[in-house]
Image 1 (tube, rainbow, N blue to C red):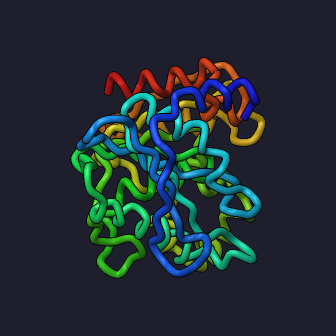
Image 2: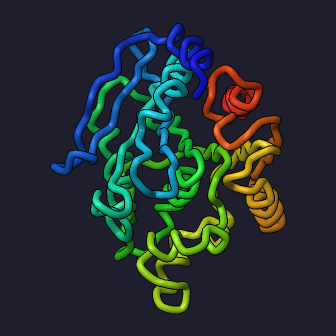
Length: 258
């Protein structure tokens, strides 16, 4: 995030965020950025990336959350346990994301009929997974959601776990041959079609997650009859989460018109 981007985002701040805990672990926390007004406010659940690993945290999404609050959204910036020292992986990371989203049911002044799941990079994979929670088997992590998303905005998303390599095997605790059910539940390409609109925003100069991943997801979703819109934008991997960029403005336009 550029300093200019942070200054622009910070200038739209409506209220200081409040801290909420959905578990006892230090990483099981969310920050809620609220806009002015009594609500009920539409909600943007925000899931950061970082290939499901430390040291990346929800802090990288704070400027975007501030920008979302400036556009009238209650931005729910989610932290979750990641691989390694955090004790994440399967099923803990997925349990955390599900519990964080479901905690919204206990917070006042939110319009839970207008929840958008927004994820960047690996957070995009988690957002796409969360959008399909209602269709998961009863015994699966995240099944039977209290709060569901009405749409998904996947920013430079890891939408194909097979292409993510060894880190995806670490995330799920085994290869597709070893734990096939986990891959079926977690891999966005295997969850097509989702029953909600999906927007994909991806920078053409992204050297971290190839734009081909979003292109193949959009093509597969469209072929399956799902609603998926790919918006290709100038910029690198972080451009879609920087409020100073044209990439973010394209994402915000999708939010405003879908």
